[in-house]
Length: 127
Length: 243
Image 1 (tube, rainbow over the protein chains, first blue to last red):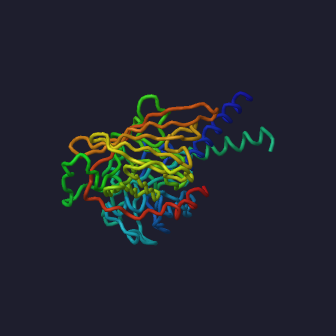
Image 2: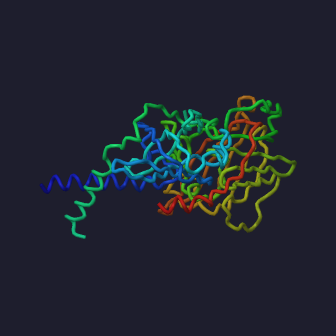
Image 3: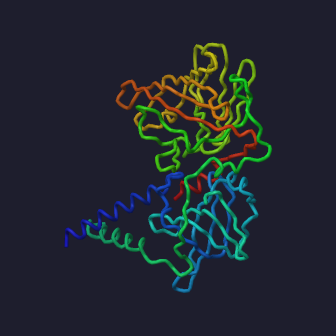
């Protein structure tokens, strides 16, 4: 039993370490790009800032409520060069977000592409 | 908290992290290629014109050469250059929105403005401005600064830049280097001006007070069509570092 708990603790600490790495600016290891997901939700807020933009997305959960996901985006300049504006995403809009999730399992990630509900694709240049 | 309770909390947290996805989140096969210059700077437009034929004319706009740049032989593990898998990392000073003396403009773009007595290098990222004074000497006293003080001389078609007075050692991209005495760069146009190569030799001190020497090679890509954007890194940094 002690060995099992010790092993779990070690694994947990490794996971904590990964979480801490997630704070590092632009570290690719923060996100699980090998297993991308598409999240469907409603825009709560789109923050137009550097060094990253931020998308706050409300996603229905299994309990019938909403989880708020904090999804990092490319810099303002990067998105501008892909045709984005600060008003591209508006609160209340339903969107589908292709993203790499945080490796620590938290409600967050980094988005690679956004698709509006009408099918319009908003590229970030990563695909 | 006792060790056992601590262990239980951490283990529970770990299990939570691997919980199944809700219905609104579905796994989607997709390949995110390594970032390229176009990823950050957009595709080249019709405004792109060829570089000058003059090997001593560096004027123009450039972008980060994410596929080609890297540290040279004998260098410590890379922090700012492209890693073997094509991913991109930033040096500690860049993470903190601090400018420094790097020429590789990574991951965005930069502009070189050349006049007879000075070459000015401006990068979009982190407000980097390097002023390279030509055909002159270092001042007798240097106040440390992020970009340092640079003087340059032409050696044939290669611009030799010496930089001293660097406030921090981030350009070395190594946590072991704590002080830089001097950086000497040999900068030249290659591939008909489609790239500029910057081969830097960095001399400094390590954390044990021993001299270190690092060679660092980067290249930047000619992209005359690029418009530099205002990049105020600090505005979003507090949001980032609160996590």
